Image (tube, rainbow, N blue to C red; front, side):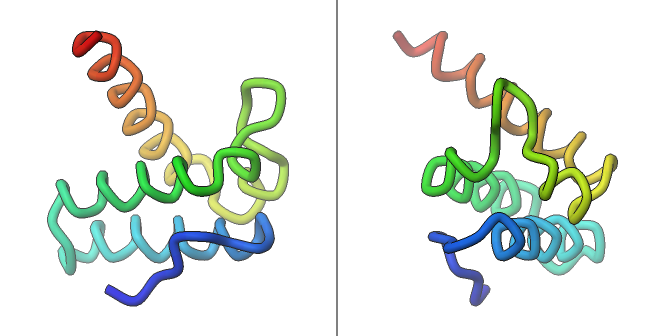
Length: 86
């Protein structure tokens, strides 16, 4: 699926998030693939995702509420799953 996994700016990151989630909503990629890409984007760009425990202003403006709700659920499930393995 040709998206960059490491981003220089928050705007570039937001564009990739939008692309991944929109492709999922358009039934172009499977749920597992979308979740994996969002987790990878977060792991590779965590400082561009969050500031003081909340999504950055740029991500809020560029991605919108619905997409960030999806991202939040994916990241929340990741934390729960990781906690169970330890």
